[in-house]
Image 1: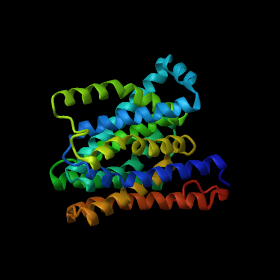
Image 2: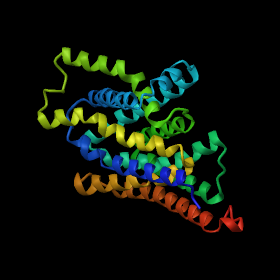
Image 3: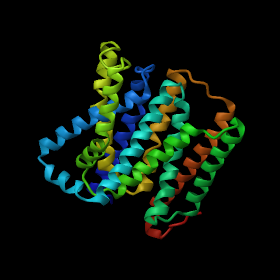
Image 4: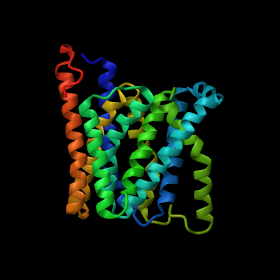
Length: 302
C-alpha cells in the first residue's frame, strides 16, 4: 500500500503537469514579444514571489546556510540554467507555432527520465522498458530522416527538463527554498536585461496593453505554482513514476495545438509520434504488470 508521502507526491506532480499543459494558451497571448524578455519576466517575478514565501515562513537561515555550500549552489545553478533554457525554448516555440513539436519533446521526456534514472540512480529497467526506450529512439530517428533534420525543439525541451528533474531529485533543500535559490541565481542577469531593453525603448512591459501587462506580471505566480508542486512531488516518488505522470502534459498540449490553434499534423509526424506513443504504451503496460503481480516476484513480465 502506498505511503501518505508517496500519494502526496503523485498528486502534486500530476497537478503540476495539468497546469503546465495549459501554458501554450497563456504564452500564445504574448506572441510577438521577445521570448528572451518573457523568460526574464518569468525569472524576475517568480523570484519575488518565492522570496515572499521564504520571508513568510521565516526560513532565511536555511537559505543562508545553503548559499555557503559550493556543492548546493552548484546543484541549484545547474537547475536554474536548465529550467531557464527550457522556458526560453518553450516560449519561442509557442510563438512560432511549434506547439506540436513541444508536445513531442514532453512525450520523449518520460523515457529520458527513465534513462537518467538508470544512469544516475542505478534504477534497473526491465525488458519491456528497454523496448519502450528503443521505440522512442526509433521515432526520433524516423522524424530526423523524414524531415531532413532532427526535431531540435522537441529534443532540447526533453533534455533541458529531464536534466532539471535530475537536479531536483538530488537537490537537498525544500521546494520553496530550492526554487528561491534557483531564481535568485538568475535574478540579477534577468533584471539587468529587462532594464537595458527598457532604456533602449524595446521593453514590452507597460507598453503592450493592459491584458499583456497583466500576463507579464502574472508570469511570477503562474510559473511558481506548478514548479512548487513539481519540486514537492518529485522528491517523494521514483523518477520513473515522474516520467509516467508527464504523459498528461504533452497529451493535452497536442490537442490544444491541433484543435485550438490548427497547427498541421502530417502523416510523417503521425508516424514518428506513433512510434513514441507505442513506446509509452509498452512502458505503461510494463508498469501495470509489475504492480499487478508484485507479490509473485514478477519483476520482468517480458
